[in-house]
Length: 203
Image (cartoon, rainbow, N blue to C red; front, side):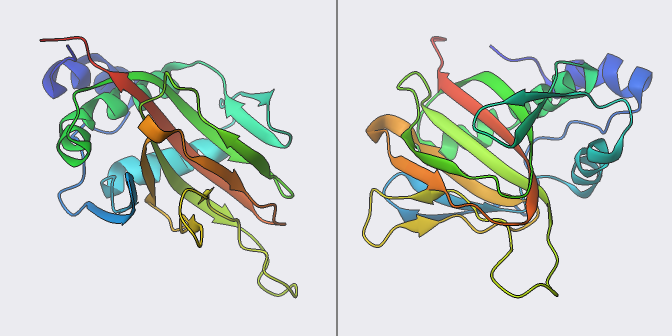
């Protein structure tokens, strides 16, 4: 069972100045683009989005080097714990979309550096749902070539579908079929949050 928004807000908002937790933005949109795959837009309210974008430039933000190459992941901290609470607040909305009862396993804040790419892979079968939301992208449009950071490309359909890298948007993947997917490299950088859920055991 997850805590109510009022309990989640009580300490962290007051002590750290974090944004209020309100669940999914009322204007959120889930568009089914392939079997068990949705593109998502407008998932976070403006206050939460601006706060998460600001974490990129916060001198208190500490990153760990992780795999795949050229991906940095925020170390455990109060801010990441608050992001986790935001992921908890999304559960009722996600339950309705995927028609499952979910439990939040982990929350991640990623900063992908230029030339980042992720080879073709399957997510672990323990992950039932992944929601990845792009927070910010950086590239130089004056340099020739397609440099905009790429989104996850899913290959369980032909042709493959690629999640658009739009701020406050991303994808929701129901992983029962363990879809193969990848990210093609680019010269841009991108920042995102990812929430990974399994099935709840609550009756």
